[in-house]
Length: 574
Image (cartoon, rainbow, N blue to C red; front, side):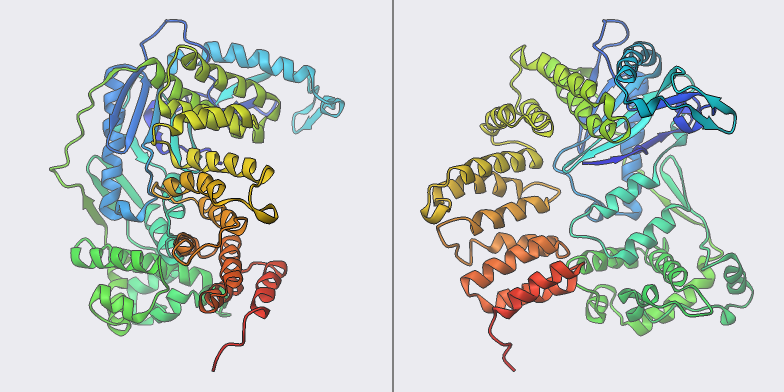
């Protein structure tokens, strides 16, 4: 499970100074920065409202006006981002992104009281060493001094297959002109895209993104800084004397990252060229080049860069591109660029309605489930209380006979995360009857079935029968159809075939070819595939995977495993 402080959305005027973070607290105070703790509703305040839009799901306990305003701005910001970063180069999600909006005035009081009590209980159970006094710049203070609770007002939490954002909204002075997608969020979308994007594109785009400012329907990109302020001034005054971009073949290979010339830091030069190349590709005066850039990035994320692939996308070779880059450099360090959203893309209609009991429980309970991992890392004494809260939220709906498959899947994941495999299996099997579950739910169901099959194998030699194997493979092949692809799905497919008494055919192992193509640097998966090919005697396929494994192995032990496989293959023919 991945966790991040920064949300997808930063609400500057809405959240400025709304809640104190730990870093903002006086030094002589103990502040515990926690994710939101939403106690049971008392009936006060507005009801939970709900809307589903393409790719987004919003649950809000704010006024309808604020909910519409923030939701429309959120969707428009993603559309605006797609002007410079198309959706196919971002992380792909089958599950809609979830946004939870909460009115600032409704949250703090009840939550502060509940968590303060939790902290008192946790404090009573602290080990003796924790009672030592704190010594800081303002003197000695007993650690028994009261600790105040601060809730993080803007938090994004992610699972393997989903993104959820919680934002506390201050109703007064809400100004959508100051909303933007954080660099942290854009970084997440780039780095978690499958297949993996080339490093030069990720670095170059993020460098450009940090220099972008957002206004409604428009992005402004400030001029490029070339390597350093001093080098930039040289480009402006005497372009011919400036440090020039290196040959593109060397750049795409990352040669500058492996060698650092004595007169210049190689990594700085490479990073500057990455930013220059991406800006050259995104040049607002050349839409065809922008399309070529995106096509090239997509192709080299599935195969290595080559001049042939470059020419197929751009229509010219490295030499011509090198010439154009050198001519573009003096322009890039001076010119401000504007990108505009197509005016036909009006803000979406936000048809709010009261959320159903099941929707509230599913979305709110799933958020609380994700909070548990964060709390375990930062304040483990409170993790059981957050787990208890998540279970309570989910079970209130279940006990009212809510049987929506998506709710059942979250119940199963919550139980699985807590180590309660019996209830997890029950909920996931029930949800699977609908045939529609999220990718991670299918994966966890397969893992539970696999553990049961391994405990009672029915095949010869302690292997699984074809029926047992099919029972595990069925949810895995369903998960393969969802996004993002999960490497664990392919790893488990390989494990099933390795423990099955029915020998797989070449067609059966096509799923592993797909997995390795998506995750070529996953040495464990590559080893599993190579081992199966060696065992089946498919020498040419085995040799390809062994050679790949030797390239991506990150330590001697892993490299030795591939070397051992290689020794079991016949010599390579001349």
